[in-house]
Image (tube, rainbow, N blue to C red; front, side):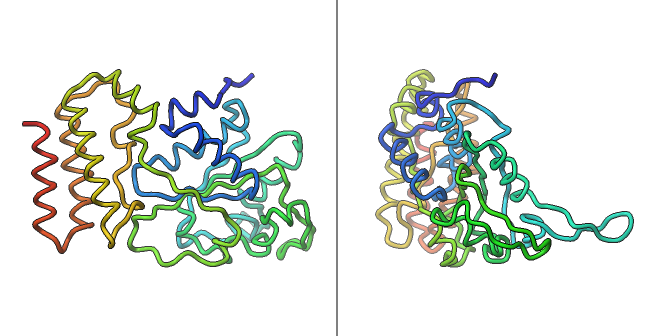
Length: 285
């Protein structure tokens, strides 16, 4: 038996309102493919696995697979291809192919394939003919695979959850093939969620409270900045899962996570950068 995982567990850990959780689940079930997009630190990867748990109702790791895309990730890694062996080359199946087979063998249960940094990979190159098969309308429809010439389909009980960092300036526009096949859900900082407020109360630290209020003010300015926007806000995960709260720990986050990010955001606005540097460090005085 696996440990039970409820919606309440999700809300307690992910710092999202119940209304947004229900909306997220509805969007995923409708499209079967979703991308969680947002700034660094909003807990996209953390939320993805727990979203799967909340839908399954249990923490069954065997029904969740996590991979990370990169520029060299290929169809041969993902679906199938020839790989070196003792006697030359051997046709081997990839991680997505294997996971689809596992899901097809248990049609009464939901399976979740999670892709971190999904927009860093070449979707057409990685998915090949499966790019059509992942669409909701084509689930269960078979197509002939390029390597083995056999029919293959993506099962209806398999859901794909991708993650995308909207604050990464090095990334080009989203591939149209990716955008058409996925719904996009904006992950937001959860400082005002019931779960985070309860967590903040448990820490019972006045300096932490001042720091969080300052970061919330900072986020309002970032969101209103026409060159940035809400996709660049500071996420709550920088301050989450702390068992103890010390000035040293908070200053480390400010000096080595938040300030470097602001230096990138406002590299051409020294006055604004200095003002927020003073405001953030002023929390500890």
